[in-house]
Picture 1 (cartoon, protein in one colour):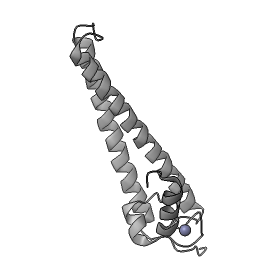
Picture 2 (cartoon, rainbow, N blue to C red; picture 1 turned 180 degrees about the horizontal axis):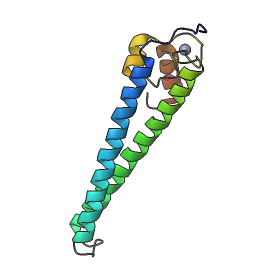
Picture 3 (cartoon, helix red, strand yellow; picture 1 turned 120 degrees about the vertical axis):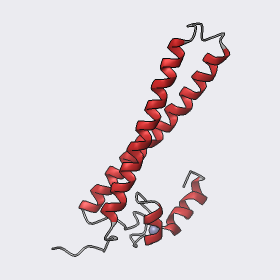
Picture 4 (cartoon, rainbow, N blue to C red; picture 1 turned 180 degrees about the vertical axis):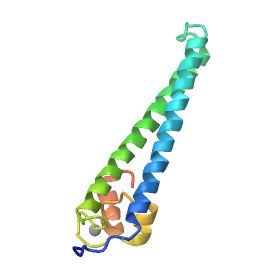
Length: 128
Ligand SMILES: [Zn+2]
């Protein structure tokens, strides 16, 4: 067995749990989308002038963006599993130091350590 820069022993479990949560979220969201579509088909097709139709369209676009986020999360989980397979999981992609276990537990797909993440956030005000 090769010795890696020790990833948390339960990294596989963390990622598996994150994947299950994300898949459940996608299933729930797409279920909602289906309901909305059914609801909008059921209402008088005149959606432009129907306030309910406008609400449905709004909810639909909110749901679509949530689904998109969840799918991106899924892609992050795939990438994290690749890193795990290659023995690079849990190492910061910026400075190469191990990422704190607490951070990985809260966010198993984290690519950077807390210090680099907050540096990046300061530089580019993007979401965490
Ligand atoms: Zn770092």
